[in-house]
Length: 140
Image 1: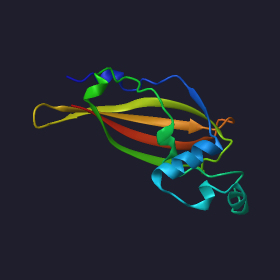
Image 2 (image 1 turned 60 degrees about the vertical axis):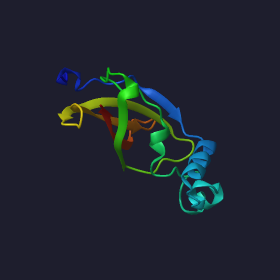
Image 3 (image 1 turned 135 degrees about the vertical axis):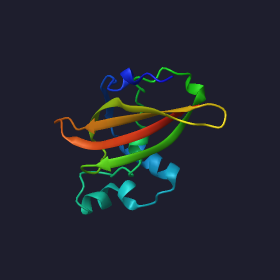
Image 4 (image 1 turned 90 degrees about the horizontal axis):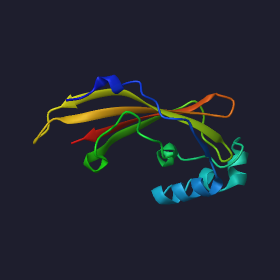
């Protein structure tokens, strides 16, 4: 039985400083050799203030999962999507909040599976939206 009353529960705000080393390490981990992630001079030539984070970089920002009160060892990462207002660059300070935006069930082989949909918003220090990510967590 799912408790839809948890929809709308938000995490506390977390602040992340985006560092050059984190961008380079993530680009290396995913095998992205685009110089915009590695060479600051090149990134600046392209019009950016510093190194540009790869598109899936917000997955590295560890946020709480508000409203999900289940045994985490029984969860799966279902999917994730990202939308950007502008690229994330080294030096950004991102203020992030996650919200549980939906819960639903689907039949599974052994038992129903519960799907939790989380949305994370990342804003810059001026309160401007930089990115939104949507994550599906599956409880089995």
